[in-house]
Amino acid sequence: MTFPSDLIAFAVALVGSLLLTVPVRRLALHYGMVDLPGPRKVHLSPIPLLGGIAIYLGFVLAILFTFHGVPHQQMVAILAGATLLALVGLLDDGGLLHHQVKLFVGMPLAALFLYASGVRAQFFSEFVPGTSGIVLDACLTFVWVVGITASFSILDHMDGLCAGIAAVAAGFFTLSATLNGQTMVRTLGAAAFGAALGFLHWNFNPAKIFMGDGGAMFLGFLMATLGLKIRPEGSHFPASWLVPVLILGVPIFDTTLVSISRARRGLLPFTSPGKDHTAHRLSNIGLGHRGAVLALYGLAVLFGGLGVLTPFLSLASESALAGVLLVAGLIAILLLENAPYERQAKLEGPSSAH
Image (cartoon, rainbow, N blue to C red):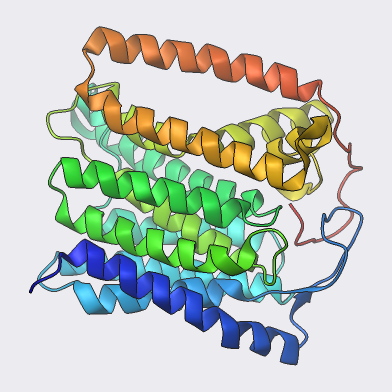
């Protein structure tokens, strides 16, 4: 009996990530790689880091088991970019890099790998002919990859949040790719889904291990890549871009919220960690830690479902959906900005909290 490649990828990544987290946790404890409690943290005792290693290895094992005869150049670029960010994040977790290196060097370089291999945005070229459209799409590719990767990096601030949101997004990317016959995207998504879900077993509240920036950046880069690769059959604007934006709606919304909130207080959004994220605010209005995370899981499922259904809507319906979601998002930002949260002072030095 022959099993589909996406099912094999999911199973290998799930089991690999689930089992490998155990020795990785022991390794982190042995070398003292732990995240200590602090005023900007929600945990009260030291938690081992390095969980991103298990996520990375689970994903790579799945790729080795399943990919044969696919576009070699693109797969090499995806693995190279993902590996680079996993390493940069690991060094950052160990305090061996300045915290801005990942944002201004690691992420753009990973985006360059993708662009050079042909994994790129195709948005402006639909409207702007010639070189101008190509240049604008190149800029959009870099902004998208850096933005989504960074959004997952700062999303890793509550037990189970980043891994769970990545798992939901990867699941919907896999479903969308299946509906549109994109074999490579389907298998990549399934591998990411399994790797994130396997780690979530150990990372859900109360977490026994954290993924660290190595894992968060790795998952963010994979989500950005899937967003660039997904191509709903016969889709047109706005569906062609609504699909990945909706599937990644939660991290995009959270990053938008903290960016606006911090900028209003004279802080730099990506260098001023604090307890001012969506989950923190939901927790403070009565949902608690688990309730806030589960609420965002539910929102991710809602957005993902809308993303998968969007290509089947009429152009008028797609445009109306985009307008409604934009207005709803602005209202949600206004409401959450007025919800209770801890207003941090300006950052005095590097920190792993987000």
